[in-house]
Structure formats: structure tokens, C-alpha cells
Image (cartoon, rainbow, N blue to C red):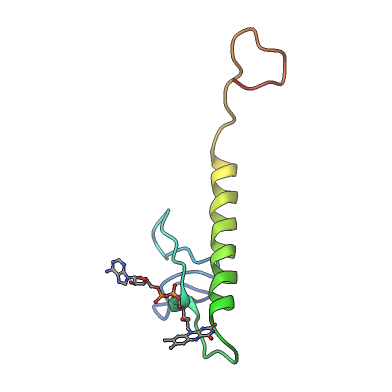
Length: 77
Ligand SMILES: Cc1cc2nc3c(=O)[nH]c(=O)nc-3n(C[C@H](O)[C@H](O)[C@H](O)COP(=O)(O)OP(=O)(O)OC[C@H]3O[C@@H](n4cnc5c(N)ncnc54)[C@H](O)[C@@H]3O)c2cc1C
């Protein structure tokens, strides 16, 4: 994991692989430094960051479902 796509890292700080639209990494391998404590919780926290980034991007790019014909206003099918 790194702050810039400068050849020293595989993914950005949200676990998204540089240069690929929809590939995220989750696991201890993304931790970019030595750890000062047991690593599993850090790995999980980073995976949550990645999952949240993916969910945000899906929410921002997925159109809302169309309303069913005759459905009350504001109600999706
Ligand atoms: C003896 C020991 C004790 C530990 N104690 C602690 C502790 O007390 N606290 C702590 O926080 N951490 C501890 N750790 C570290 C912790 O286990 C790891 O940091 C953590 O498991 C890493 O999780 P991960 O998901 O990145 O990788 P892993 O848990 O290694 O998961 C990788 C998975 O990918 C699978 N896999 C590999 N290659 C392929 C493939 N080609 N196709 C499909 N699947 C594949 C493997 O079978 C494995 O299930 C310990 C580690 C060891 C070895």
C-alpha cells in the first residue's frame, strides 16, 4: 500500500490496485510498514476501508432503481 502510484506499492490507501478499476486487496500483505502490534486487527481495519471505498463508488455510480408503473411517488419497484 502506498500514497502514490510510483512503483513502490501495489495499491492505494483504500486497498484499490493501481491502474485497475475494480480490484481491491484485503489482507496482511497490504500493510506497508513493520507493525508494532499483532497485525490481524490492522489488516481487518484496512479491509474495512477498502470495502467502504468500494461501497461508496458503487453507490455513486449505480443509478437508482426505476419506479414501477403506477407505484406511489418516491417508491422504487
Ligand atoms: C503461528 C502464528 C501465530 C500468529 N499469532 C497472531 C496473533 O496472536 N495475533 C495476530 O494479530 N496475528 C497473529 N499471526 C498473524 C496472522 O495470522 C496473520 O497476520 C493473518 O492471518 C494474515 O491474514 P491474511 O488474510 O493476510 O493471510 P492468511 O491468513 O495467510 O490467508 C491467506 C489465505 O489465502 C489462501 N491462499 C493462498 N494462496 C492461495 C491460492 N493460490 N488460491 C487460493 N487461496 C490461496 C491460504 O490458504 C489462506 O487461507 C500469527 C501468525 C502465525 C503464523
